[in-house]
Image (cartoon, rainbow, N blue to C red; front, side):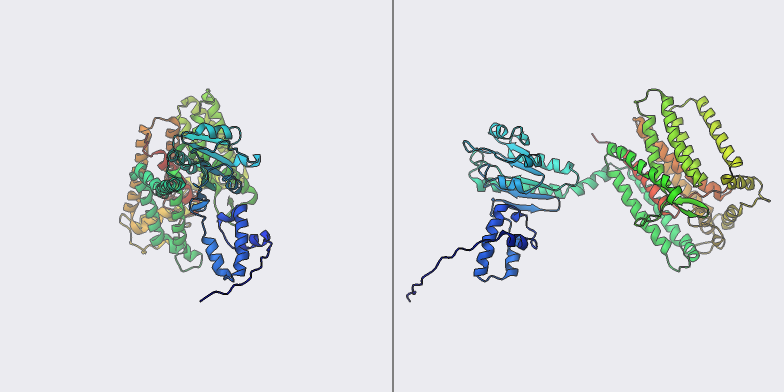
Length: 582
């Protein structure tokens, strides 16, 4: 069958680039960021109209298009990393479009250059590019790029790519483009540009396998170097607190708030999960980076503590909490304490001021400032805890005992003056008098109920849920949890909890003994002393060894701020007790 001859008329169609940009708004494809590729797409869009191609099919096809093989081909694309194989590029001019299109480019180039090839790129793009030059003709490329673009030179493509990945890992979350656009012929080490492109893809595949496994390797290194015994004790103490929260105190708190569910237990669980994340995060950070970061967090938490008298929430006559719109209510002092330890330890071990008394004075002023902010709230328990921790640190650092004695006399005189001559602190005086005068005292109700609860439980306790006096113990789920545990599980449970604390503290002191760096020793001793003193005060108040003051039991008591604080301390301890590998 013979085809009939038809006459065709040519027609000039004007391509509208604005329509192309509008079309690309619905398609996320980095290939079409380049102006030349946009122009090519404009022709395709116009031709597709004449061929009556379905628009949805066109969109689907274009969105998946990654470029011609080895020509501006996007071979990997994630949130913060794009890899482009442009092996077909054999001159500077064929690479310029890509260099103008992307930000933060790691440009891999090298090979046999074209004679007389020149590099023309506006200065505004220069700081956006880092060149990784490889091969035997490095001198040509260095001469062309010198004083324009920062560069490094390498023996071969493999080493250049390895360095680029190393730099990406050390970067913060910055979007980076690895651009393999050699701007030269491939005949130095390869048969042709296809062979060169294939080799690059092979290297990338291997690198990405390592890159994907880096997170796994990170946790492997953490678990390999972490002190597993200390970590196990921390988890065991948290689980102990969670268990008692479920069986003993959760329903008490729920009844007081007129709820009939396990709201407090679930909150306790959420705080512990959050605390576990904090522990892992602090354990993973590089030691030096942790110590530098601690200064910033200390200043931020100190700022929140300063805000308490102005915007704090008053609960039972004390302003100790801050309640922001997007954040849960928290006590700033619980964030201040761990980082105050690091701050003081860093100053005491610093060689910047040779005179040790200058260091003592500076740390004393910082501690005094924190103590005054606590006294304003008022929170005498935390004030004493802060001063005790500071005293331990300066004692360990080798302070003169005469100096320490005079300092304590000075602090005692200030404390005496505040209690007996400042009306705001009269409640402390009443608590002390009540403590020594048990019969006529009016501030012994909490302690009396707590000791009654402990004695009624005996050695082995009444059993889960059998306690009756726990309903009369104020703040049973926080400041008096030890008395509730004792009633239902007996004194034997308290002995086991104390044994866990002692083993935990002993394990850390063993690490301190083996540590050579003074700053690390001071931080570890400070963290341990904070936990130990808080435990002693909590148990001492419950058994009437000390006057009444609110103090949670580390790891065990309910309380978001308290759990986060002890998690931070635990994370710091695990970080500083990790096995050091050269």
